Length: 156
Picture: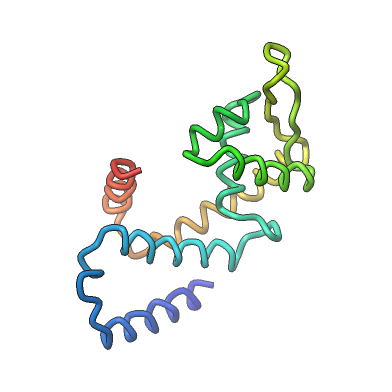
């Protein structure tokens, strides 16, 4: 896997050396998007749970860390459109990873919980994400990686 990433990086560097990016080379948003595409591709290339996405991973981490979180609070914390999140939750529910339970304090709200399968899935995904993060950050020092995360937090 590591050699595939290095090979892709080499191909990309060679292509970049032959292209004039103009203003794009100075745009933060452009570089964030290029990095996001690379990170997403690496994630999908080696994810241990078929069809699982980074967005689904974020959702199950937040549900695990915040038992009985409501759909509304989850959407707000992710900065996600509520209807988009509902569709994502439906997929996770269909896969048996999460369950929605009517909130006892507000019958209009749903609490979100991981199922047993969800907890097992989260464990597999956490092990995977540690390796994934190592791969995508291997060209950064520990300090650079921490600085990048801090800078991205300022943007988003």
